[in-house]
Image: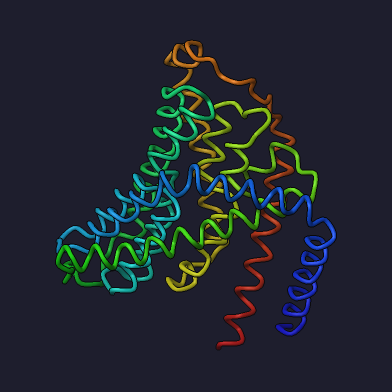
Length: 322
């Protein structure tokens, strides 16, 4: 079974290579757009925050878990997964605790959502604040829901930590590596997305940066909150090695992403309802896309299929190891 899976994977990769060569002009345009996204949005908004977040986490402290969650929510994905993985790697938390933290420590960053999505894309900082609050509250609710099931800690509560200079140097190294990996995925997905016709309501489920920042017609704020909380498969693929290292099943992670996205959608609707649309009405928003739940359901079905495929490969790998 493993050989068959590897053969299918190799065949699919070979097919994609043929497509990239055949339609190299389109792929090149997509890759350039991906590079521009990384240069204009990802690197400026995420790299400085990620460096400082990693530095703070590596300093001597008694509240490493709290810092990892707070910094993950502030810096944004995939920093939450990176910081959680570092806690697990240093034996500060157990695999069970890492599993719970990864249920909610996955959120678009403060700078990305408010500055990039709100101010630049929607041309309204208030819209960005609504989106960020919706995503954070969704994570907080899931944290409270999961607490009774993962209440016991089996690891040491203290962190040995580093001095500031050592922490900063190590943080720069890890952060640059993380940004490089993230940028590579964005460029790859940007190139692939140019080869196929993909509806606007599907793209954010595949690659969140392109799906929101390059959308011809913007989604309504509640649906944007849904997409931001879900994160997109591009970011999911980036953290797959971290999930594997922490012994977290991807399908479990995927289910909580869908739950978090649904909560963000509802919270955003509630905030807009009680604000009387004042923030939205005062802005010069671009035209928004009237999403239909049936269409979005088709996109989610595709995501679930990909998630199931990832689960099958994960189970096969575990069987071989056992």
